Structures are given as C-alpha cells and as structure tokens.
Length: 161
Image 1 (cartoon, rainbow, N blue to C red):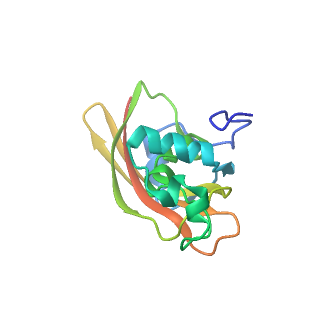
Image 2: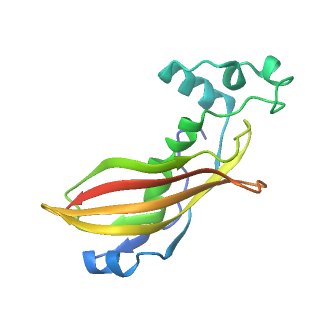
C-alpha cells in the first residue's frame, strides 16, 4: 500500500445534531489508525514546502546528528490532522466543512523516520456561526513507543449545515 493510501479507517464518533456535539465537549473521541512515517513522505513534504534541512532529508548526516536518524518536519506531523480527524469525528448533515485555523500548536517530541503515529482528540468547544457551527477539537498525536506527544494542537473547523 502506498503511503497516501488508507486502509480500513477507524470508525469515527458520529454526531447527528449540534446538541450532541455540545454534550460531548470534553469527552475523548477514541484513537485513529496508526500511520507510518516513511522517508519518502518526509522528502515529498520537504519538496512541497522548500524545507530541506538535513535533519529531515539527509539520512547519512542525520545518523551522526542529535536524533541518530532523519526526523519528520513538525509541520508534516501537523498536516496529518486532516487524515486523523475523519477517523475520530463525523458530523452528519454537513453541506460544507472548512478549516478555520489552529490554536496552541506544539511539537513536544521528534518523529524519527520509521515511526508510527496515531491521534486522539476531544471536542473543546462548539459555537454557533451564521449557517452552522464552529467546532474546536484538541488533537494529541503520539508516537508508538514514545513517552511524550509529538504534536498537540487545537483545530478549529466550521461546519455549514
């Protein structure tokens, strides 16, 4: 399977109404599937963003560096939220959903190439907006075998109903 293909995804928590969303504020939404971070993904991200720092794209030099191997860009890890999100939360009746922004982004630990990552999340806020709702979701991305999260971020989405 190619790195951008997704097999059977985790089943998201489904919300049929805005009231159900509001009632779930503070509840953990479960876990996404694991995703392996391969060097090819890191190289493609470097190409897309222009960030070719050796800790990401030079395995030989990185082997003697502080992490002992290449590591994923922090923003690559953050960019996985659109992959993890639909595995954790589904809002029924949405005509259009848009990314409104991200708050409180941190990268507490590195992601060595070859790591497997997954996310968990909880709804932190639901606000009415014209034509829909704004939903804030706190994501925690963890590395298999790691002792600290590799990314924490509050994603803000608008769902137009």
